[in-house]
Image (cartoon, rainbow, N blue to C red; front, side, top):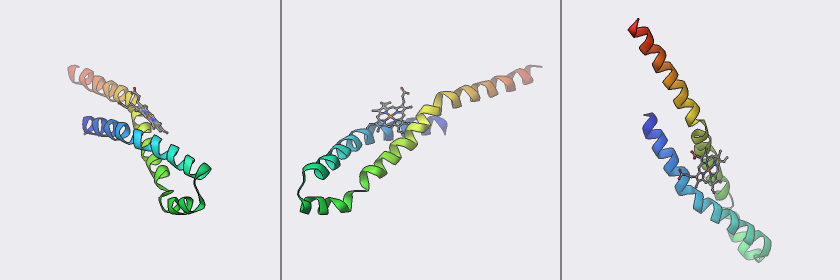
Length: 86
Ligand code: HEM
């Protein structure tokens, strides 16, 4: 399960990174230099960069915590092995 999450969270984080960065730049340019009609059209899609950023934050937080999760699990496993040896 953990290996599955590790793989997919990293993949999602990697694949969403480029569209997120491009969309944030795109939204910024539209707001700064776009005409009011284009800005009004964009209004409908304005939440998309925030939603993508939320996915980045969730998957990124998991990737950040991953080494600590693995460490804690290894420690638990070693304690269980030591108990079984006794
Ligand atoms: C709150 C937001 C974010 C957090 C907490 C976060 C955290 C992380 C962490 C912990 C890693 C793994 C580093 C490692 O194991 O070496 C990572 C990788 C990465 N992050 Fe983020 N990140 C965030 C947002 C972003 C954004 C906004 C982008 C780009 C638009 C981005 C692009 C990447 C890329 C491309 C990788 C490498 C993925 C791979 O190939 O394994 N991240 N991030």
